[in-house]
Image (cartoon, rainbow, N blue to C red; front, side):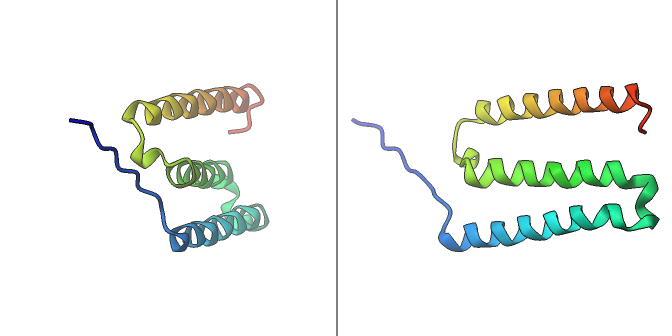
Amino acid sequence: MAATTTTHHPTQKTYWLVAVMLAVVTAVEIAIPYISALDSVRAVLLILFSLVKFITVIAVFMHLRWDLRSYRLYFLFGLIGALAVFMVVLATFRAF
């Protein structure tokens, strides 16, 4: 008996919704530096918004939702490593 594999792909509507969501998040990221009330949390907000975009792109456009779970872990380890390096750089230049 041959194993059957099913592939799930997002619909065109999903791609458009994700594109709109990414555009809105990008617009907010661009606006954050211009809002002086957010000066104390600017870096944290920008990091959070970039994480949202990173996870969205990986989950939807790279189809990781339907791939092996270990693939998600590879990206997670890379993300954690990148954040660790970024935090070290910020700490080195006392940008916190």
